[in-house]
Image 1 (tube, rainbow, N blue to C red):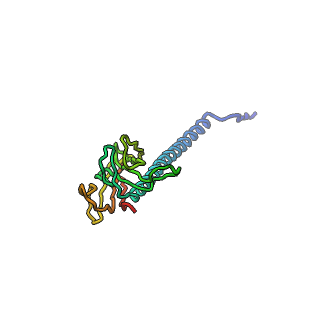
Image 2 (image 1 turned 90 degrees about the vertical axis):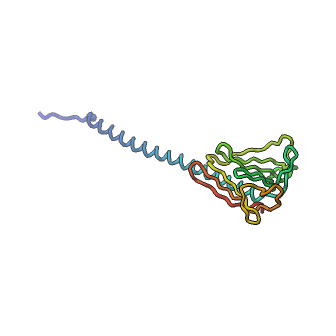
Length: 196
């Protein structure tokens, strides 16, 4: 009589081979999925950084192009020039302040750009002659700023790190040159005409 072999299940060897294949396929899938997730995180960060840089570039350009030669009074009553610039900070009077609700207010604005704790900030106030306690609106635009340098070019071509050139100078400002270096060694450079 011949013995019949009934194959009612899998042998232990077949189960071990199947499990080994599943582990190998799972490891490959995990590595591929992990790579995709890391790439998406990096892409999202680059996209966010680019969006912030574009937003900053537009705001800075709008501000510089809207500079007007109007002096202001600070909270102590002292008269300040329309543009007060240092190598790492800038404040000025600008026009074209947005008024979407048609409120009764001036379209002039006082603006400051500066770096604090490796972050680039813009402060603004919707009236140019400050009251006793002005309420500045502060907004962060960029972070990881390693260096923020500003140069000022007068209408006669003289470049300076401070503006105005002298205490009683009436020389018009032609260009503002801005260089921003980031911690990752990337940089942004601008040459913007002051006023329109």
